[in-house]
Structures are given as structure tokens and as C-alpha cells.
Length: 246
Ligand code: BJW
Ligand code: ZN
Image (cartoon, rainbow, N blue to C red; front, side):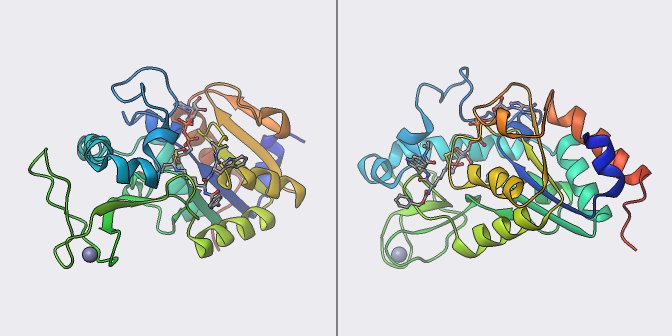
């Protein structure tokens, strides 16, 4: 069975995205070799121990990334996924990205598996502070209530994903008839377990990436190419096949 045939009858789609879908917007991926911060592996910065040891370094990384996000926009890949949500009755988007670009593209329901970089909170009392004071580069932002360290509201290595959000993504993966894994190296668990959960439950699984990944052999199809070019074609095909909500 090929994707084109599946698209003629699909009623339920689950999409998992990773950093690759935002690459065409100008957001650096985690595991590309170029870039200012790629001398660090994500495991070195994206963990609580690193934050406690050197909160200034970790905040520099997040502030650098927050700044990039102020200058970028959703690309045709994000927009195609927003169109899919409009057209497909049972549609779920789970993203590993923290960049808010899916919502900005128009997706109304986004399962953010790894949190959201625009939010932050105190590590001691939990008070939310989405606009922490980062004006002094030599000081790390502190909680206005208790003086504790403020951290980005993202999921670091060794931390649990929001369980209700992950469970909802897993249920959607196990229920869908088409699962799309887009722009992820598929190295980080438990998000990387979703394609297999979908396959084991009988879904047709498709990977979209500019290169093969460790998981490629598991998918029914791997489409090699840019998400911003392939996803609009898939959305067009759904539209043509009258997958429009009644
Ligand atoms: C394009 C493209 C274009 C480019 N078009 N494609 C051993 C086995 C299994 C699990 C573990 C293990 N040892 C440890 C673990 C657990 C660990 C883990 O998975 N580690 C692995 C590295 C082995 N996972 C965790 O710790 C998770 N929590 C957990 O398991 O809780 C239970 C637990 C609790 C306590 C103790 C132990 C367990 C939490 C994981 C959190 C990950 N967090 C980060 C940072 C988020 C915040 C932030 O943004 O700063 O999430 S790390 C980073 O990686 C980020 C990403 O969401 C995530 C995935 O990266 P992604 O999106 O795949 O990006 P890249 O860069 O890797 O890939 C981009 C891809 O795009 C590439 O393939 C390109 O080719 C492609 N591409 N341009 C299409 N135009
Ligand atoms: Zn506090």
C-alpha cells in the first residue's frame, strides 16, 4: 500500500514533529553540525544538573533561541499541518518542538510533549514568570515571590514529560490510520516510541526527513525531502480526496 492510496481513505491522522520542521523557518535543529551552540550536545545543556551548575550558560542558550523565535515565521510545512487539522475529522498533532510555530501557523490543538520556550517558572515555588528579567547578562533571573531560580518551562533529559499530554499523544498514535513522523532524528524517548506504537496498532507509518534516521527501517515509507515541500503535497491530496470535515 502506498501513501497516495492511504490518503484516499484516511479518516484519522496523527502527526509527530521535531526540530526539522522548523529548520526551513530558520530555527536551528539540535543535532546539526553547524551553528553557535552546536559545540554542546543537547544532553549537556538540556538537563537540570547543568542548569543548577551553570544557570547563566543555560539561560544564554535559551535567550539566544528565544531571540531567534522573535524573528522567524511558520513555513509551508507548518501551514500544511494546520490545513490538515481543518480537513481531517480525527487529527492529532504532537510536537517535540517548544517554538510555538505550530500554533502560530493556525493549529488549534497542539500536544507539546517537551513544553514551551515562551513560558518559565520558579524551580522552588513554581510561580510562573513568562517574562523573566534577563536584562543583566551576569545575573540569572530570580523569582519575584521567593528569590528562587527561574527556569524555562521545557522538559529536560531525565524529566518526565507531562503525562496527560503524552498519554493523549499515545492514544492518538494507537487510534490513527496514518501516522506521519516529520523532521525528527527519532533519538529521544519517549516521543520516539510513538511511531512504533502507531505501527503496532495497525497504522500506516510514514517518515518525512531530509535524511534517513535510525528508525527509517521501521516505517512503511520514508519520504526523503524537505518537510516544507512534501507536507503541502500531502495536504493537497487530502483536500482532493474530500477528506473535508462534514
Ligand atoms: C528535516 C529538515 C527539513 C532537518 N525537513 N527534516 C536509553 C533508551 C531510551 C531512553 C533513554 C535512554 N537513556 C536515557 C533515556 C531517556 C531520555 C532519552 O531519550 N535519551 C536519548 C538521548 C537516549 N529521555 C528523557 O530523559 C525524557 N524523559 C524521560 O524519559 O522521562 C522518564 C524518565 C524520568 C527520569 C529518569 C529516567 C527517565 C525527556 C526528554 C527531553 C528532551 N528534551 C529536549 C530539550 C527540550 C527543551 C528545549 O528545546 O530546549 O527536546 S532535547 C531535544 O531533542 C529537544 C527535542 O525536542 C528532542 C528531539 O530532537 P529532534 O526534534 O528530533 O531534533 P534533531 O535536531 O535531533 O533532529 C532534526 C531532524 O530534522 C534531523 O533528522 C534532520 O535530518 C531533520 N531535518 N531539516 C525535514 N527541512
Ligand atoms: Zn519562587
